[in-house]
Image 1 (tube, rainbow, N blue to C red):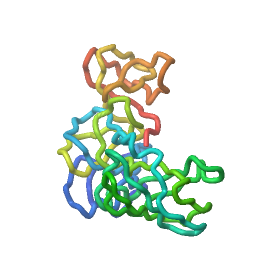
Image 2 (image 1 turned 180 degrees about the vertical axis):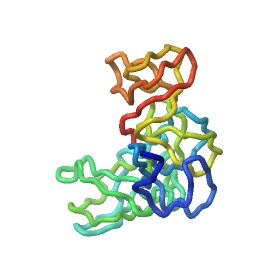
Image 3 (image 1 turned 90 degrees about the vertical axis):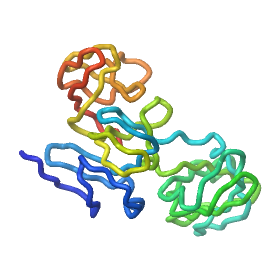
Image 4 (image 1 turned 45 degrees about the vertical axis):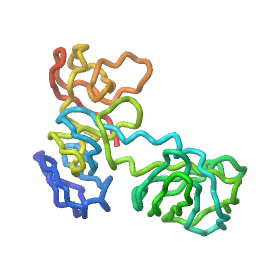
Length: 241
């Protein structure tokens, strides 16, 4: 078994490369898999990233929750008009390939959709969110509420235990550049200072890994090599993305 790619997309970017090509925006979240079980997700950095440090999705703004639906929408409609509230500010297209869930009215709670596009959303104004699929329940103006999140692979940052983890870059990544994050299989890990023994289950903490204690978090992988205090080592990651 060598280093052969067995499943990939049309993304022309190597796992040890980064790019600021805007055409990659439509491919965020694409998967590249190798015959040895390694799996990567295409991400865009939201800050400067370091090799070997786990990254997470951006934190969802609290004001992105319980957005009021400002106009009625029938079953089958693909456009949802919402009132933006304080700090729920998204530029045009910023929610592309994010998600929307219905809440706060019987029949709508838990209905879930992928976002195709959005108009600019700013405090005090209405915005239109376009879905890939039509509504399965009618939304009622000034009664239905929705919660949204952006694409989880857009503007990823170093893990801070405040959002789902995505993977780990194999290279240092420039802010606003696209790159492949390893999300499953053998890859690098940085010890948090605890010291890790080969075979230990590990969890994540602020981008680093530490011995899994059986509380608080599920393990994100298992140590393949010993990791001395603050050292790098090899981790076999469970599927993070």
